[in-house]
Amino acid sequence: RSWSSAKRTIQAAIDAAASGDTVFILEGVYAQAISLKSGVHVFGGYSAASYARDVDAYPTVLDGSELAKHLVASGSCSVTTYVDGLVLQNANHSMDGGGASLKSNCVLNRCTITGCYTTGKGGGVYNAGGVVSNCVIELCESLGAGGAVYNTSSGLVENTVIRGCKGNYAAIRNENEAIVRNCLLHNNEPSGSDWPNSGGIYNPSGVVYNNTLACNFGSQYGGFHSDNIAYNNLMWNNH
Image 1 (tube, one colour):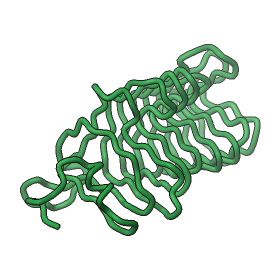
Image 2 (cartoon, one colour):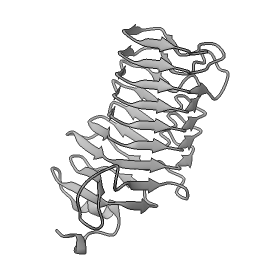
Image 3 (tube, helix red, strand yellow):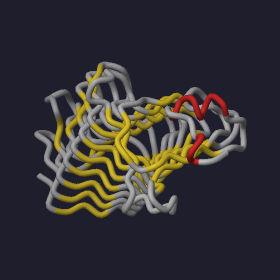
Image 4 (cartoon, helix red, strand yellow):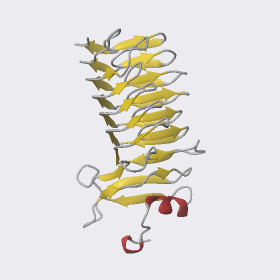
């Protein structure tokens, strides 16, 4: 009810909230991971001095250096649930979703996912029916599939910059009617040599459109390999 009486952990605030509530997080670095609750939104980027919100000026960082788990996790939410304005960094573990694991109706918006690693799928995000929107995913790696995002089960990745990521098959693996649109992927490369290794996107059974793929590298496909629907994508200087 006030900053002076606020919860001391993010999860405690989420657990105390009801659907329709929003948890506000002050700027700072938190060695904490969170599990989402359907309908409880989580917003970062608040000034500790003025309580004004600016996600760039007052970064709220979840750091996974010592946690061995993804930093944001969700079950299937019955209503749209937002995570907005967080930095997820330095996760390192073996579960699917290096920085975040999302299911239906969960939206990761205006977040930066950086330096996250998993031996599972989705170095930055494992997205099984959720939405990744207006994010930056950088310097993430997966030994499973999808260095930045493993996008499946009608998941959506849109308006997102993906750079410097390494993943088996590609930076994004997109399947099961998932969608990738309006994204920029540059300077990504595979982490292994499994076919079909591509620097940018591997699209076995999804939809990919209105994206730019530049300066990606793959030993078999430079920018893009698709077995399904792809249109209106711009590709240049891939190797």
